[in-house]
Image 1 (cartoon, rainbow, N blue to C red):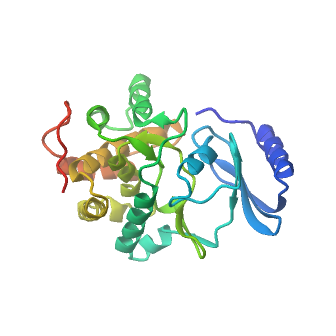
Image 2 (cartoon, helix red, strand yellow):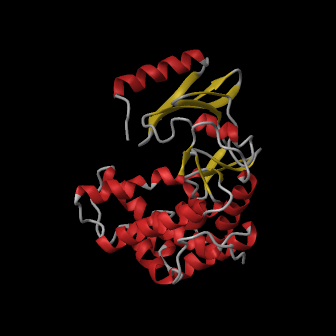
Image 3 (cartoon, rainbow, N blue to C red):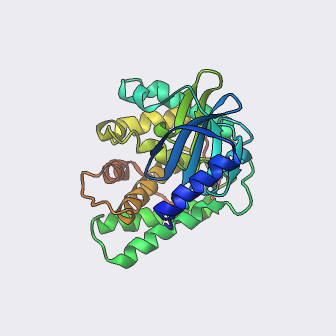
Length: 294
């Protein structure tokens, strides 16, 4: 994934803070961004300047959701966005870790329901584009991920892409860390990658989070409970969502290796893939079929 240099990041940050008249109070860095809390015109704001390309168009994506279940946008250009600061800004992670995973799942379903049905911005990636990760990994000869998981993950991913119905704009990384609470606006999604695909795809990131508790999310009972809840609330196809969870877990492990991490069987994504694999339907979706709504 192409990224900008530290000097370019700092120059771009200073340029945006001046252009958007942000009085910067504090700054910090994440893996993907340089972030500042500050104010503009008496409003508390967050200035976010991206390091990498995978959220480069997050402002456009957020605007495409038209304020439905997502944080609103004050200003945006490619690679930078100005947002209201959400207060208190706590995420769903603490709720899930506090033994309230069912409540967190219900909130995630509510947010997804609000975000559903929006048209993607021009040039938005499709889930088919992300499948290239399987090919890149296979070409490296790396063996950190068992070969059978890579092959099965790629097969399921390909079949699901070819048979999906009603692609729409998706967040692309909707999970507990990316849903925050604001006292005036309620629970809102942040940091979208933006991708087009069927809504069942959106379940994948949720199933492998929060990362601190693989014993929770890699449990077949948790996977089934969560997906049954989403199936009821959002009228999804349970088996397709389950298969997406498996395929995306493998792809997530691949992305981790591409980001420089060393993985083994204890990796949370691999643990989830191994947990879901025996639960998968015996049939595939090699040709388009009528979906069985549950």
